[in-house]
Length: 260
Image (cartoon, rainbow, N blue to C red; front, top):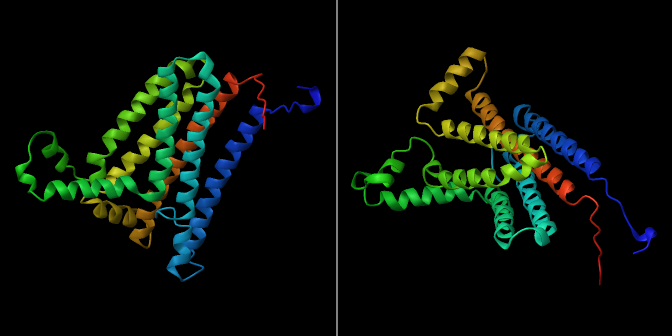
């Protein structure tokens, strides 16, 4: 490989560009949400929903899903770089972590966890909730959305196992703050989502509306949903930046040769 064929990539510069771009994109989405949904410059609901952060199947949802997909691909790149130096077991764990983040992106866009959680609850409830005891009986008493009872625990366990597996590796590169902040944003966001499904949440929204002098209850509920979605996006950004830094550290000086 001759010197003129070598291309040097400044990863720190690119990571900074990616981080700033993601943050600016999230600010842009907030502005568009406000302009199209609060200012209501278009009366047509379909136009408003394109930029509505509180609704699925919108540009904000697409952005959040693409971030998660990019995070998953980054994890796959880390696995490929480390292949010669780690055991087969660790390699498969890295691959599974990448698949988890890819699935998060797919799930976010297709609302799989909400639909699956509701379907499971309806199937179980066909026999009557009073007939179920033990763990299923406890889950059926969940006061919020069904997915928090039947799907969220799986995601929580996966997140915990991923954090435990990565802690030592990230600690060696002084990157654990990205795990803490990233997963922390996700946890807070899901906590907010849980409160949104509570039976008496409308009373709380009305209380905030009257206390803050907001004209409509929608202004409160929409803002809380916006905060939840933005926290999820920010958490994904922080995790992605952390994994990019890790990739940059382990790939430092590596030459990649492309062949036909």
